[in-house]
Amino acid sequence: MLMSQTKTLLPSFSIDSILDGVVKSWVTIVLIGQWMFGLYIFILYAMPSLLGSPELASKLSPATGMKKSLGADLMVLFVHILPAIIMAASGLLQLFPQLRKQYPSFHRWNGRVFFVLALSGAFTGMYLTWVAGLRLSDIGAMGVSFNGMLIPIFIALAWYTAVTKRFAAHQRFATHSFILVNGVWFFRLYLMGWFVMNQGANGNTNKIDGPADIAISFLCYLLPMAIVECVLFAKRSSKTSVKWMVTMFASLGALITLIGVGSAVLLMWFPRIQSVFDAL
Image (cartoon, rainbow, N blue to C red; front, side, top):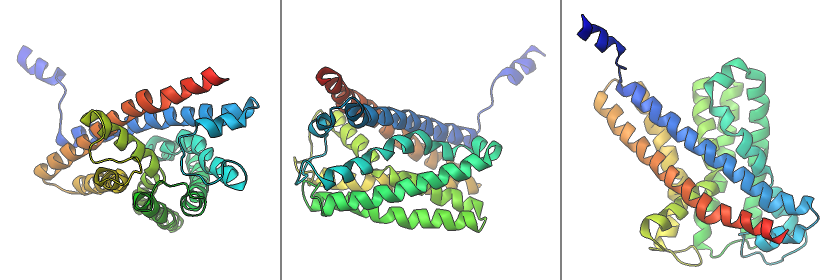
């Protein structure tokens, strides 16, 4: 009798619940990283301007390769970067099913704002890269440029499937849109994580055109998108072996993101935040 009661008190784990837990953990890591990034953008770019020292943001900005330090290109840079604060605060909220069900109006309007800002970010990003010269090398900019070209395509698919009430397809394309919109963010995480794991550069160059740089510039968004497709496939599959393989694949994605977030916070974002406070 005691044995049977003990068994009922023990939690039962299924592969479906484990996969769901891994996905939720990954989303939580991204959520924390996104909000930390939003805080970093606000302190680095918005705070100096609000306190009357806009030149400080230009001086401390990690964006290099700009042909002109002032003028229209600098304004485009700010228009490109500052909306990231809003997208970091609201983008992930679109992925929570509880919010979608309880606050459908907020979900629709928040999604529209996110899509508009995402399109603006994609177009201004392409302008800054190829017109303003905000790139270190042509080949090193190919990955982020392909990312920028995919953003309008997947946003259009997400919008069309929402309008036609194909909500399963809409969630799929909206998730891919979120990943693509944050492609540069993922690139920074993966690059910093790569440096930490290798204790320095390994296949990287100062112009971001080394073999590791180029591979990361494409994998930073293609790998998460592939994991999303695998998770969706595993949820439809009845094979336990498939679910376990996808769980391991998703766990790898979560681990890479965790290493990247920790590395970016400690080695990239916090030192620049400290520089802003030291200079103000």
